[in-house]
Length: 300
Image (cartoon, rainbow, N blue to C red):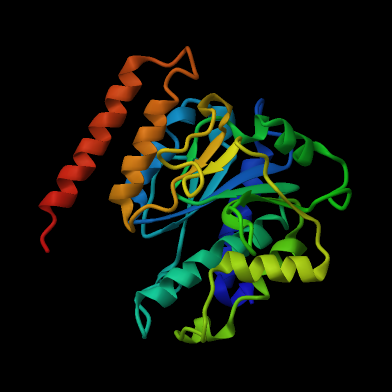
């Protein structure tokens, strides 16, 4: 299924960039480990916020590989999507909802392809703040440096919250291409035909059910180190200085509200890193102000 979702030339480009990233020794990322993300033009304004706290950590950024839909930036390496692949993620009939679901499934295809080259891959959505280097978190470091992938869990996921499906796919750490491919095999085939199946669910729900039924070892990423806005949004708050990644989900659609929440979290955590300068936070506020002005000036 992932070969249809990501064209062969795009998979080859992704794998090539992962190989190049892994060839660079890093002082802060384990050997064989890579950080993955995706971004499109709509969420591109979030990238400066996403990487604000780690933008000077070259040892981390040199291991960042993003799939970039009609976008390019300097946060690690952007793998440009070919026009044929972009067309597939354009507005489908019956509407944008199909494209949204397909985009959600892309992360599993990325993980599956990247893990043919990497020992470990950590995927984060475009609205996940990197407050600290995630590979320095004790659980992640242990996962990334063990000798065998089958010794324990093969996938760690962000906790979605209480309910039947605890998996949120905004933060995924995996060591096996087969695990990602098993999750991807649960994607409803109707989506590739531009149709929504009856009772369509999010990728994470299909993936969780498929992985549990197949017996693959999966566990939650530790909390509050890997947090999400659904359960740590106002008035609730985690112990901010213990957070490594923060997912700005459960906000209104679009980059504006995500930017607002990401900015507020950056400000909440400003005292967690004593070496940060006040100038950084002036830059954060200025970026958010410019985004707000662009949104207001955009014609209806």
